[in-house]
Image: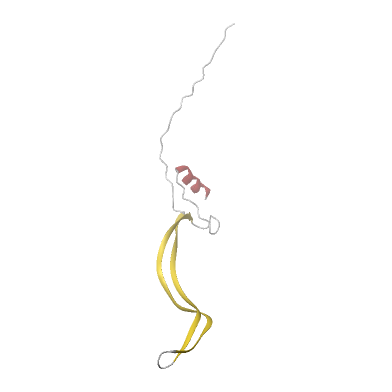
Length: 110
């Protein structure tokens, strides 16, 4: 009676290919921040003056009105990218795919 012994050996072969990924379904999202300085008067102090500029009477009136409003600066902040057409929930921002596999997954999911 003869015995047979087998040895297993794996041979790995790498195949190099190129892939193209369409990346048109994403848009950059920015937040434009405008700083507005608003001066609000909350109390009006009144002084009644005599001709010699001495104070005859004074009192305060509580109030609330906008005295002036001016734009102090505008800045733009990059928020991220999101898919076109509302594929993400409203207001949700997601990170851009960075690897080829993630980009292919995005392309084939749509």
